[in-house]
Every structure is written in structure tokens, then in C-alpha cells.
Length: 488
Ligand code: NAD
Image (cartoon, rainbow, N blue to C red; front, side, top):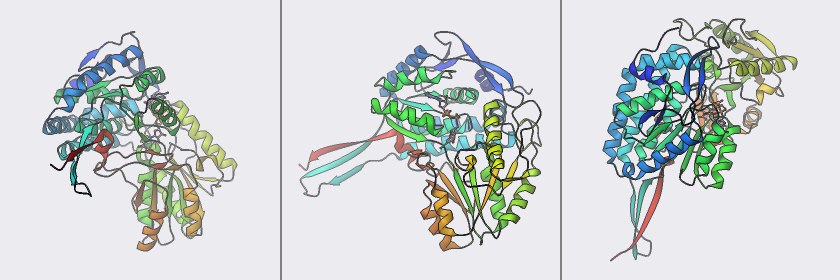
């Protein structure tokens, strides 16, 4: 097994929690293993945070809030900029660490390091552009001043599928806005978050502004924080199921909430699509992160005139992918995160086959250590198959044919989720009209990749509340304060 080499990575694979600017042992002791999904074997143990550690981290965040909010925006900006540069300088080690704990191929992990770094750079630029307003009231008798202030101590909770970028997408705007924070990473992938904490510390982030608490038991750690009355903001990325639970807890303490939840992306290929672009787009939208992405194309609707050709071409490309441990140089598809994830994908494929689907390529788990599943294309998928309703979260492309534009838009919208949709057509008016009618927060128009730190990422319906990235990303961590003053 390759070893992470730099000090940052070695520190991340240590045994401590990061609280109040220092590496500390958990109050109750204890650790839990982090597994390599390519082998199923433990990589290392990390410290297991409990309720008392949550309290310590909250105290640190509350204690640091006032002074941190009063720092010059330029100071916060420059900390982020330095962190951006350190992340890029350590790109290879961070990518390796991420591949080891999460499974994605090294080339994709390098891409995620760049993506994460861009959030640090983007919000270093946004930190110095927090503005307010001044207006004369309509009756001319008073002046209206509006200022923006940090919302306060924030709780950040991230998933395992993009271990570095999901943390950076929350931490960077919180720093830019002047919020202190407690980050709880996913138990499957805490190492990248610990490495990022080390980097931010080196970049000059003051003690207490960020604490990182890996835990094997998130409920008892998180709930008291949300109910404490001292956390002012929760920013969560993960499943809709856990998002609902956290929203209910946040509601009781009236905590401002941002939710980046699950997806069930429709991918529409119209009769006038450029087939080369559509197949490239499907490969990107389906196979990025082995299909373990909230943005993954989950339901591929292809016009009946192209469905057969599209299915063959996609299957050819899928069959040519190299499945194996992400640390091996030629590998393009790594393992799924764990045995349960692989079991879920197998069950969804079995259900689709039992309802009349055909396997064009793949179709099963690989018989080797680790949690590998073959890149799979299914055609003739029945619309009542379970995989049309559930997030597949694996390398399975189900193809359904359609004839009518209105009908396919209705089918695309027939889901509780609304994160992203993909539209492939060379007809401009159809492109715009379908993009407008899709009930989603983002549309990929003739592209299978929408993620961009400079754009507002997020969903509608049960895919979430709020946006991350873009000009609006910092708003999630700011409040308005209005000051009324008479004209003289
Ligand atoms: P998850 O909901 O199981 O876990 C997400 C985080 O919540 C983890 O840190 C987990 O430890 C924590 N958590 C679990 N139970 C909790 C509880 N009771 N209290 C507090 N925290 C708790 O999701 P996951 O399996 O880690 O990630 C996959 C999901 O994330 C998918 O549904 C995917 O679509 C979604 N996702 C969404 C986006 C987006 O931007 N919309 C991005 C990436 C992933």
C-alpha cells in the first residue's frame, strides 16, 4: 500500500481531533477504523469524538467568534489564498490520501484537489467584496443603512463521496464571511478533512475558528450542538433522509439551514442531439466518481430514433473502462465505498432485470477483494423499476426510450428530487425551453459536468435549500442588519 508522505498527510492519519487550533485526544478516548474500499482492509484508526468533544469544539467556536468577525476581510482573504497555495503544493499527497480512504482513481482525486482548491481561491476573492446598502426612504424622512454580518458559529456536516471538496465548499465561504465553525466529516473519509484542517492552521487560521470532529456516532454529537442555542447555522451535504432529520432539529432551535441533498438526475437525449457529445456527456455525468455523485445521471431518456445506437456506443465506452484500485495508474473506475453500497447497486440491477431490462455490458459485482461493481449499461428499462426512483450511486446507466418532448419532460420531473438535469439537443429553442421546464437547480446543456466553484450549486424540491459557490455562496454565512436613521 502506498504511504502518504508529507507532514500534513501523516498528521491527518494521526489519532487526534482538531479542536481550538490544536490536536487533542478525545475526552472519552477511543478510535475507529478507516477502511480502504479497494481492499476492505483498515487503513488506520482515527480519534472518535463524543458529546464532550462536541461541547469543547462549540466552546472554542463561540469563544473565537467575536474576534474573528472583527478581522479585516483582507486578512481572511489572505488566509484562504495561502491555504489554496498549500493545497496545490500538496496536491499529490492529498489525492493519494483521498484515493486511499474513498476509492476514486488518482486522476479523479487530483481533479477533486483542484476543485477544492478553487473554492479556497474563489472565496478568498469574495471575502473582500462583502457589501451593504444605503438608501433614502421613499418619504425622504430617513436613511436606510444595510450591513452584512457573519451569521455566527456554524456546524458543517459533509458526506464521504467528495471528501475534500465538500468540506472546502463550506469552510471557504464561512471563513470569508467571518464565521467560526465545527466540521463533522463522514466517518468513511475523515482523513482528507483532517489534512485540510492542518493546512488551514498552517495558513494562519486563528485557534478556535475551525474544529474538526470525526465520529463513529454522529447523532449524539450533532444533536446537542444544534439544540445548544449557540450554533447559528447548519450547512449539511448528504442524503435527503439525514437532511430531513437535521432540518427538524434545526427548526426547534431556529437555526439557519443550508441543505445539499440527494439527486435523481434525468439525462435527456433528443432526436436532434449530437450523438458524440451525448455519449461523452453521459460518460462524464454517469461515471464521475464511479457514479457516486449527487449529480450522477440516474435516468437516461433517449429518443427512440437514437436509443439503440446510443446504447451500443455508451456500452462500448463503459466496457473499455479499467476497473481496479484507484492507486493503480491505468485504473479509471475504483471501488464503491462499502459492501452495503455495492449490495444496494446489485439489488437495483436485479430489480430492473426482473422487470424486463437487458444488460448490454456489466451487470454484476466483481469477484475480488474490495467493493467493485462492473460498469453497466441496461436498455429497455421499465419506468416502474426501483432504479428510476432511487439514487443508484454506482456505475449503472439505465436507458429508457421516449417519443414525445412534453411527455419526457413530465417523466423527468416525476421525482421528489430536483438537483440537476442534462439536456442534449442542437436545437436552441428546444434547449432553452426544456431547460426552463425542468424542475432542477442546475442544467447541463450539451455537457455532463456542471460543478464549478464560480457557479451557484444546489437543488430544488427535496434536493435541498440554499446554494454553495458562486456569488451567492457567501450569503449562506451572512445576515443582513438594517439600521434606520433620521435624515438629519
Ligand atoms: P449521509 O446522509 O448518510 O451522511 C452525510 C453526513 O451526515 C455524514 O457526515 C454522516 O456521518 C452524517 N450523519 C448521518 N446521520 C446523522 C445524524 N443522525 N445526525 C447528524 N449527522 C449525521 O450521506 P452519505 O452517504 O455520506 O453521502 C451520500 C449522499 O450525499 C447522497 O444522497 C448524495 O446525493 C448526497 N450528496 C449531495 C451533494 C449535493 O451537493 N447536493 C453532494 C454530495 C453528496
